[in-house]
Length: 273
Ligand SMILES: *[C@@H]1O[C@H](CO)[C@@H](O)[C@H](O)[C@H]1NC(C)=O
Image (cartoon, rainbow, N blue to C red; front, side, top):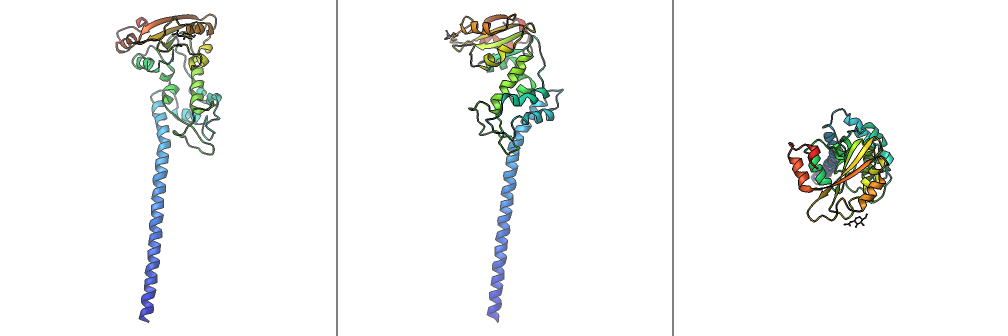
């Protein structure tokens, strides 16, 4: 009798023990799932919050609408099947405003040109506009069957990837509204300042239309050990690629002068070079 009771008691204790272990395991699983879910969501919303906080620095735009128009271009799509046109609705949601005589284009001079335009507001690059500044330096893509935005593992080698397609579409739209006297900062530190494979050559130059665009004025940034200057033959190709009626000019400008003009607001922009 006594022996049987203690045996039953032991069985009950063991049962309780098993239930306890199952509960602990379940709790651990739930905690792991919640933590994983939160970090994944945080990853996703980190991109979205960067997008929105950069966007909110500009007035006159509905950033939530811009975000939605942006997402529809690549979300739930194979990241190698996002063509340039996928961003048409985004450009329509946040159109570029023509800023005659102030529009600045660049090729291989990103740091110099932005060092300048960040400090002086007489010139505006694509990266100073809403869409350009919101997406500058970011990587993004979608995946088939997912509503999320990913920031790692995004392909850049296939032609129709979300990042390259965006920059081509945005560059085209920005060049389309160019007007008046247009400036382009090219690099004398390359052997071919007007590089036929650049976005400037492939997308922008051919979109400048006369008489809306009066002139294209190249600022050739000359650093120490420069490899070329305004005399380089590639610039003849630039001149030839321009639509008839657009005046061309080129000026070699030391990088130090551009930096000086950036840091001294008392120097009038039109006398910088
Ligand atoms: C100048 O331009 C041509 C192509 O247009 C290029 O082949 C040449 O190497 C360039 N650079 C120099 C430093 O001559």
